[in-house]
Image 1 (cartoon, rainbow, N blue to C red):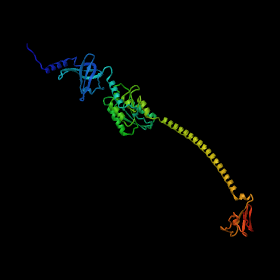
Image 2: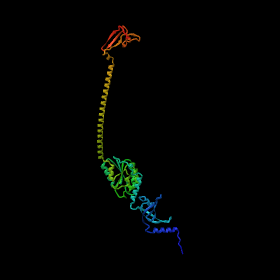
Image 3: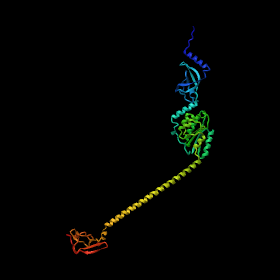
Image 4: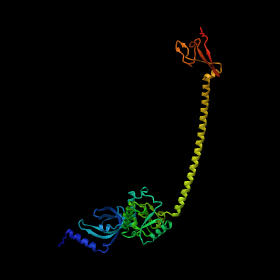
Length: 391
């Protein structure tokens, strides 16, 4: 019996050629759940597609993986399109995936949810990070397509509200492959220019695909890094993008964004009049309060001074009465008199009494001595005839 002996390589090549020549296996749509997912550093993706009863190995090379709008994960149900072939080194067949999409949910929705989750975890949506929109901005920058309807609506609303506001148009693509990069550039240029106090970033409505540039990560990071507050105005009221979540303020439409960014001149005039009235009312109330306080203090001061004067008068009267009581002249009225030395005075054991010295003892007197006797209504001059001392 003749035997045909083949090498392993020959067998694998024959099987591979057979698989690749089968038209059915050259373009397969395979639905399954991803498991053992591995995103290699080379950019290739390796994983297994499985269902309840079977599994098949799969690989997606870097060129195809780079175009995916979402990041595959283990446990995700997907539909993979590719060709079936043999990996000769390991001797096992696998699915070479060219395109991958989530089963049941669109790839863009998955990408949106994944980026939203990532940025939220990094704090991009934190209200404390966001800045207030200036109430009286004097210069507004508008980043949008220069040919779209949105830019005309924004300019018209700003001009209607206040023609004194300066408008800077920073043209940028808002749809297509390079739109996110173009808007990042515009944000950087407006910040470098430094004149604008607020930026409106937006466009009119459209499909998810039309608005997708506003869901890209580089644009989200550029919005967060802007030193100038940004109002996001993308699509219609029901459309939300990643840019809306990151921006300092979200306006439902470009028209609404213009109303937020531009203050109404007439409203400001009314506001100033209101402030003036409030200030006048406050000043009037303050003056009235101060006048009442001053009047109260004056009344207290008047009563205090009157009380003090009364007390001082009473004290003075008391002292005057006491002084009058202690005065020697008060004694005169009761018939008493004061005796003083006349001339050189008398010679006593203590010496010669000086003229005018009050005599308080008979020991200061001597016969023939002249003395002056002082009464309440005058005085008399007398000469001592004799001195009598009490035993």
